[in-house]
Amino acid sequence: MNAIEVEGLCRTYGTGRQPVTALDQVDLTVPEGQIIGLLGANGAGKTTLIKILSTLLLPTGGRARVAGHDVVGRARQVRREVSVVYGGDRGFYGRLTGRQNLRFFGMLQGLSRGRLAERTEAVLAEVGLLAAADQRVETYSRGMRQRLHIAVGLVASPRVLLLDEPSIGLDPVEAHRLRDAIGAMRGSGVTVLITTHQLLDIESLADRVVMLHQGRIIHDLSLEEFRKRSGYTATVRVTGRGEPPEQDGQDTGGPVVTGVTLREGLWTADVRIPAWSPSTFQWLGERLSPDSVVDLEVQALRLEDVYRQLAGELS
Image (cartoon, rainbow, N blue to C red; front, side, top):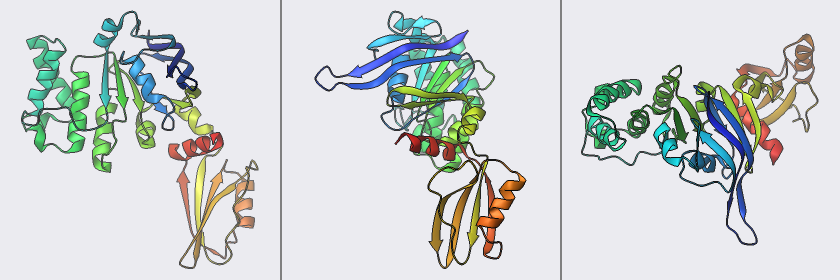
């Protein structure tokens, strides 16, 4: 069964001479249990889509169903099946403990006392907060509060979890812990839709990548297929002395010098490699004089590199 089904979804703001189109004929199908990464620049329509799927905003055209329920005609049923978690660390009672906060929000969602006790311990363990469950939330770090937000989102066993910028403002250690908490849901049957500008979140978690641009879906691919859209497999960072290589103005189908910087008498050049072959090594030897090279580092292609390239092609 599909957890999310969107057909021709539209959302326009304003009715004057210049209405703003936030979503334009969006089609999206998400099977149960998948983790989807939703990418796009600010204003691309990511948060608008989240709000419509969670019944916080009405569409102006098209249809959307969550767990088989129409978001307009059966909004109450949708709310029983979906939870939304926004980035940030507010929304809790600081003088209550993490466990007390979780129980409070669980009661608001209608859980029975026995079911609430069971789910409270389970989700605290899932998000790595069991040891801190009896500490006041006012003593929690920002990352701990964000994990508690996810616990609140999971306590009622939703079929769909919508995460809007969940790691915003977190330091690398807390962001890693948050990704572990989200990754722990894999295999549980919960469908997760994540909007984020933190590409490492998507790279670590997503099964599929959906990229929005000006309210339209322009890419809907598996993580591996999305990587291949760049046409490159790796980047070689070369540091050398003397005359630096010239930056290539266009893609030639072979290795491409994408950036050259100068610092303290040395130059650094980034070279995108489409595939490793004898011709690749020949190109490197001809373009980069071996006598001038003092350091060479091969870097696996990151999702951020792919996204920046694809976003650059749109500007």
